[in-house]
Image 1 (cartoon, rainbow, N blue to C red):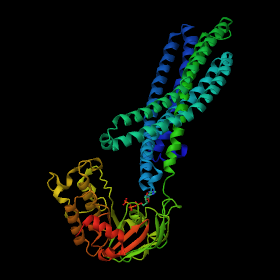
Image 2 (image 1 turned 180 degrees about the vertical axis):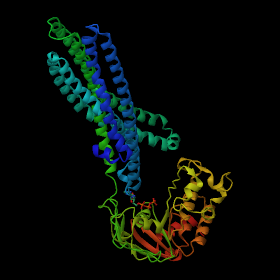
Image 3 (image 1 turned 180 degrees about the horizontal axis):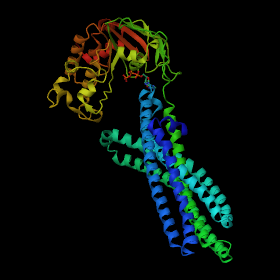
Image 4 (image 1 turned 135 degrees about the vertical axis):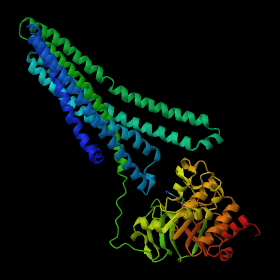
Length: 570
Ligand SMILES: Nc1ncnc2c1ncn2[C@@H]1O[C@H](COP(=O)(O)OP(=O)(O)OP(=O)(O)O)[C@@H](O)[C@H]1O
């Protein structure tokens, strides 16, 4: 946990982290002066009727109080800065890990969100408490004990009995509470997951009239969260009252025993009052220590969960000493075999080539492996056998960014981000000009719904593109992928939600814009692939047939059947 905190405290934040406890030492020093000064006022001022002594020492008490206040405020400001900056750096690091992770299966969004928000907040709380309390509490505790023994050694045995009992009690409670806090964080994860699914699937839930069912399920998870939170809180509840009780009994013992000693003339009234005051300071310090330990136990659980996310950091890509550079935009798969789980091959000994400027169509039943081909081409997964080259360059020998510059992919799931149409279209080419955006929108047949909007390309896009229809989102997605004009364009079922007429227009526009540029069309619609130079029919991860549209009509019963079903007698 300390490593994570220190790694994310940089520059001024690290300075603030160390400055806060140092300044806090000033407050502790000032606080520790008060009981002694009070005792001196009673014994040397009031008892002897020396009002000058009383006034001078009262002024000194006031001075220490003001100095202590200033030190406390300064320490608070520095502690807050350290805590906020650490949280900011840690959140941004975790988000970066999540974004760079090439196998998103390891990081489920719901748990990731809880970890980035809730768990980081627990760690921030700890930083805040550590910077203020870590010095204050032990110093007040230690200083209080030392000062009380110095001021009134006769009453020291009371402390020697009370303190060890309290320390043992605290350790037992903390040991019990840590596993409970782990369970509580898991319950928060579960509530987040269910809430996220319900919000995302709101339409489906309504369509199946499942509102009550989903609500009951959510209530169950909520009750579970409440139970675990309550049990975790209950585990630490006895701490403060027990500490208070033991130390109050100590005060009573000090007054009773000390009273007898005063009568016997062994100690003065001022010494008893100072001792009792130090005991109160010790009590406060112990309660603060308990709070810190509770925050520690929560933060340790959170740190473990945060560490699990940071551990997903992709290993830095080992760049080849001489990176391969594609000579052109041709693609070659040579004997490629791949499975998401090693035991189950999804692609089996796949071999095909697309010459530079060629158009390849890939068609096949659902689950036949069409998208997996593209997952390999874009290096989303690397664990395959055989070789894949672009322009003669092995993609394993190319930096990932170079692969992504070569290959632009329009996926079926057209995810838009909140912002404007323009901010979405320039994702792959930040310097794109308005005429370039206009040309891309024309190709994607998106101009017809962009132009009528008051702000045109500056029109707002809501979260996930909710203010556009499914087909419109796909058209914006196609425009976005066309803007950078990559050497290789892949359309993976990218027009599945677009109507037939618009689909035909997009197809014609693309054919014109990318006449001599390598293009791969993956589709369930025969019309989308039938004009390609070469069409591959995939079946269970194997190439069942290949050829032109006319050739496949005779070579592939599956293709012929598709044509018959989709085009009828045409
Ligand atoms: N990330 C993944 N982890 C595990 N298995 C996967 C993953 N992605 C796909 N698969 C499996 O790989 C097989 C091929 O999936 P793929 O998405 O390549 O098929 P597809 O032909 O594109 O299907 P569709 O036309 O339905 O999009 C399927 O059986 C699928 O369940």
